[in-house]
Length: 170
Ligand code: SF4
Image 1: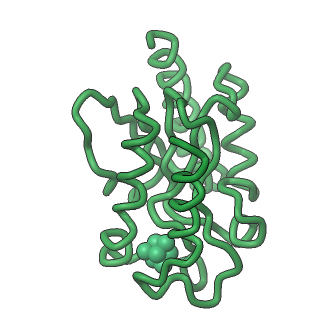
Image 2 (image 1 turned 30 degrees about the vertical axis):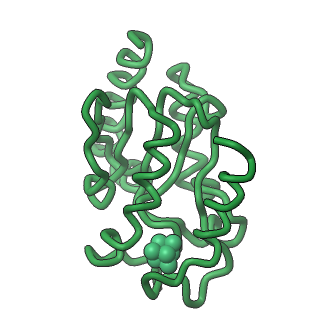
């Protein structure tokens, strides 16, 4: 994607008012990572730290995710990471189905541009990510749940191990 098209795509999201989530937010959180990444991670929605900085997964659960991935040889700088909706929700609630549906075209465009081989879906809302033939989808417990509950944490680690095995086969 040329810088000009990338700029216009980002501007479209920064000024988006298609659903009500843009209200009372500081930044849209578009996503970050290489545009030729083989692995894409899709989370639920930006949290308070992400809203503050405009960057995805920089809060506690994002740091936990980054650290756990690195322990299994998956480095964040090689991954494109984004969310199913680009603005934080009031009181950080789950985005409603109509908000997800309204925001999905942006994610679809990101998938079309990046053409990842694997898409990792974090948490239940991310399961609404559109399925594209030829891409492997991998569901993982959301890191915020893994941080809170021991059983979830064990499962989360097992899922990351499985993911790292799949990445090695790319
Ligand atoms: S969440 Fe998505 S659709 Fe809603 S205002 Fe933000 S960018 Fe637009």
